[in-house]
Image (cartoon, rainbow, N blue to C red; front, side):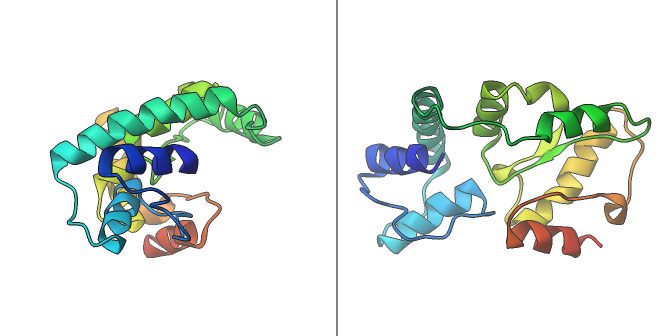
Length: 169
């Protein structure tokens, strides 16, 4: 994903090595792109520029996924998701900093897309912590019983994921 983001930055904004040493773990993709541009002294991208960027990024992402064979679903993830899907009253959504379209590409590539009926994505809020209410609203619109944010379990692998979980109790 990072290689695809960097390639799209180079193609769309003429910024080679745009991500440089920037920390991207747990961050929202739109903010990563904005910060890369700002670090290069460029203005924040327009919505049209972001749309063009996302299109290029998704093309590069598909390419990277097909040509990088060592990428795989971690052991136990599919079994965990299968188990969670059998629990009555338990909904499984996706909360990610990825653009919604790139998240779907990744999930489809690894055969995980059918586990997540709703979610919240990088373009849905100004920070990761804003995404929990968005995901809950989408779940509710799909017929799930409304849940208080402090009844949501956020599973992640970065400090920003933990910060997001703490922000909602």
